[in-house]
Image (cartoon, rainbow, N blue to C red; front, side, top):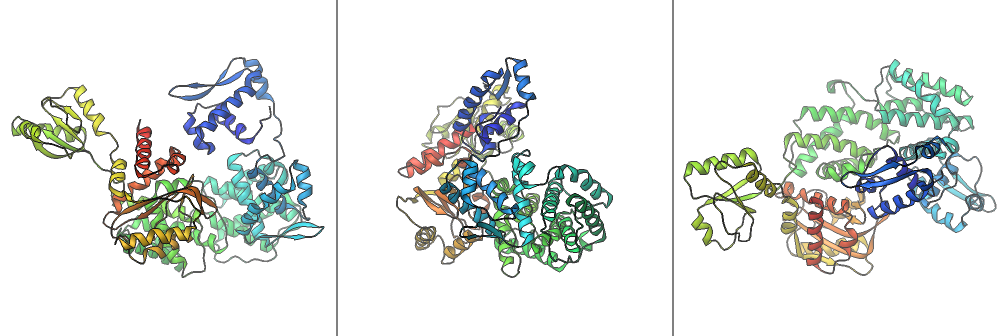
Length: 638
């Protein structure tokens, strides 16, 4: 059975052997839940004649129900080659990249348009992204009249680009025709796998599974390029130890057999670098003597201490972990070898504190070195820094429930009730203990809820009754009040204000927006004159786009005198690098409130996860925005 598009095929594969809810399917496919439901309907239409349907079971998700095992068995036994005609813009970009990276001759868009049954104008639009991708590797496409377009650039860059592309495609669809038929020589990937594993075991070289897989793709790309007459002209590797040399020599003999040509010394030296760049180092920190490695570790830890007030300089375990990782990282950045980081987006969203600290430190260090450290590499460093922060600091700040205890019995009973509350729910903070008479005289209650030994009339906060020896039911009722998320709603109240809310319905540049917002904050004494340049510098390093049209611009370091979130809604959109931002939160965070303000990021991640950007951007005033935000939190909690 052929699927109309790749997403339907992926959805079928996800649900064929696993039951998944629509929220999880939407996350994996990077679409809305509405799209998931539409795709399920389309799949069920296709499967109707094959004796199967996907049924939604409440509480568990979509699962495959086979009504005719015979017909469905026939469907599963069929194996048809995937379509070799790209249907979406993303597919076309990948196909175009592979064609340019592997073709020995000039290509004409007219010929490709005829082959793929689309217009030349459509391909011209796709070529914009193709050129952007190639430019990241210092590759370019030159067009000659009546001849077509041809790729130009260094051979190592061509291989790096093609390897990165194929590895990324393999994470989505390992059976893609781009991998199996278009880009690589037939059977090479399968032939490399056992030999590469044996080689690593023979010379005691440790790598992660992802690194081994990535190296296998590079070797397959090298075989294709060498067999077609595109060797690396000259290259010499420095500071490579003996196990790496031997492993590279062993693999070079295999690559020579697969390509039908003997590998040059330059090829073998470049292969040594790939082994060294992905190797997991087991050396003790005292045995690592490279000045660059030690200098970068010390610089990062000192920068975090001086700019963010977190002292990790005496954490020997963190120092050792960073030194071990950075030794191979320096090799990669020196030779411009890219390794993927499939967890990058999750790292950004779940380690925002460590991400900003590490990115700022690396960017500052990079001003004094010739190296450029990619986002993927920074992400790996962030994991080490994040673990160090968790070891020494309470960075997962939460607002604990504040409780008013009303009790008319003796002091011993009060202490007993307090002890039971702390034992059952240690996060509770009993702020006041008053008598029933004092409670009746109160007009308002500042605490989150009230616990009383006697029945009370509720005022503006919930009341839970608890006897000195509480029943399971009473403990359960108190638990319902304790476990309510109060951190993010409290953030809305504390750090969001109508004075720092703006709707922009006309075109404006990113820099003009920063200037306007920062000037207002500076006039009101919230930030100083150094805040605006720092926001622009931070944006220039890596885009602050969180995703789905939500951007979080902020400064490098903690430069605000008071923590404020400036909310900007731009229904028409503001150009934000290669993307468009429609909901912008400018963060001005002070040193005094930094740990509390970190919970703000969780609020933004909730907006992203619940796909509330369309509702947020259409709000007409601050009250509407706040109502949508509160409803988003309520929906997630329920």
